Image 1: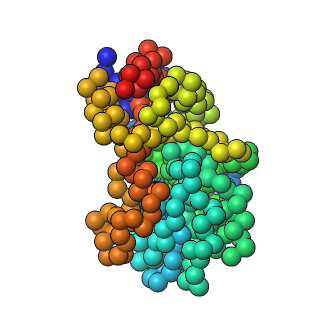
Image 2: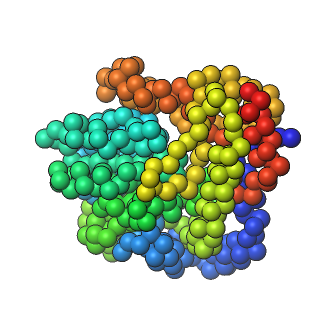
Amino acid sequence: MQIKCNVLDRQFQMHQEEYEEAALRVLRSGWYILGKEVEQFEEAFVVYTGRKYCVGLNSGLDALIMSVRALGIGAGDEVIVQANTYIATVLGITENKAVPVFIEPDEYFNMDAEQIEQAITPRTKAVMVTHLYGQASNMERIAQIAEKHQLALIEDCAQSHGACFGGKMTGSFGISGCFSFYPTKNLGAFGDAGAVVTDDKAFADQIRMMRNYGSRVRYYNEIEGLNSRLDEMQAALLRVKLKYMDELNDERKKLAAVYDRGIKNDKIILPKVRNGADSIYHQYVIRCKGREKLQKFLQERDIQTQIHYPIPPHLADCYRYLGHEKGEFLLAEQYAREVLSLPIYTGMTDEEQQYVIAALNAF
Ligand SMILES: Cc1ncc(COP(=O)(O)O)c(C=O)c1O
């Protein structure tokens, strides 16, 4: 049996007719970028996330870059970020010439709230928190620290659509909730797409202008903007998927519970979920000291796995200029050596999952 990391077409097939209908509606409408479909998706996502405003964008990276920019954070300013996040989080900072200040993750792979205060300097402007692998970060504590020090709180929710902390949805704690709808995400489009959600009208207006060349009224450019518009096709398809979001997340939670119960191997450390937090299992990430051997063992049995992520951003070639060295963030570096993401996707059969579990237990 061959098991892929991700099988996207099964999710499409579950609601195929609705997707096809939405796609045809857009094709026949004669209007393809920033129109009624985008407005309707934004309205639906506002309701889903419990925020006041949503601005549909081209990608999750744009959501991060534009959030930092709209807050006026730029050259010389510092933004605190966890050292084991995906590179995109950090790019959101450095694209604005601001400086990422890394801190270690906690045992749940998320930002360790207790490390924030010692990283604050007079130049610190924001905390950018990633709800990694789908688990909500320790938001009560993080929001409290950000408020105490008057730091902007930006949430990278690229992997956490629908995940909650204390019953409150990720993306609704900070001034900005940044979402990616890249096809593999839990709320995945059929191409690139992203969004910012916020309760701050002025901030939403700024992002809205920024996404369309800096203009509110066509050809009247108030600020130096970008082109980061959500297209009608992605918006229409996303609105279909959003209706089933909780169902899709529940299915992943059930798959994760099957892994939790089924994997029994002393060499493997299973993921944990913090009290009060919730995970939508964008990834199911185990740890293993002999990770390369395990990955090869699984590969030989035709089971694909992925490593999220093999090189922490502070050691990435592109950030050599920041001057970080190996050994600076021991836990993040250990995770980079040990983490392995198992196959998990909507429509995964029990037979497929039991095959993976049997292989893991035989290792
Ligand atoms: C944590 C995180 N942040 C940001 C992004 C960027 O999203 P996008 O690929 O839509 O630009 C991703 C996805 O790739 C991600 O996983």
